[in-house]
Image (cartoon, rainbow, N blue to C red; front, side):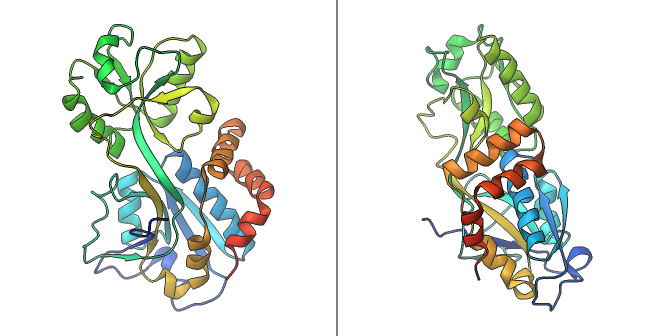
Length: 291
């Protein structure tokens, strides 16, 4: 298992802990309030709801807040959130996390998921499109459109600034929307066996629901796979070392995370999906909660 980034503890150098951090400071027990911030991607939503329920089992009051990615990092830095889900390192979120920054402390324990990838994906019935380099030949079939997610995401930034010019896709329109809107376009096209290309990442529940191919990226413009980590405010380990220990014990595999994301999509209820997944994986999560 890779060990270069494991828990990321972010903070503002001049910040005085307040809000969620104020009632936890200098305590070492399983009481108090933990504020969890999470970005609006499926796996981050899933992680946050699982840990909301696990921490509540341990006696904590937990408050959740969904935020755009940039605000997640700044919120953890300023102590507005005790925990943030999540960050992809060392490549995708390097603009938000600087390993040598004076305001970021990188600890060495625990990784939530290894081998996360970004790219462009098509349904497998598009047999003539196997590589990003094949897309220009399919321009008319695809109506000259690549369906993307929110414009502030690293995936969209890499696609627009690096992938499109590198592979000569300037004639394509990169449609910025949301994860939900992108998935809706994918579902509609898939049901009709229409050609479509979308920005996608793994882990994602659609990969278990539909037969999709990530297009070959022969020049590795999207980079090598990342690992997924969580953020913690400065001082959380001192205030609640048990929370850090539990989080560092946690690791999802393709199978366990796939099950969680599938439940989340099928039930359309994040809390219920987390509850059912915990019940189905009780032995695993109990092992995380050992001190």
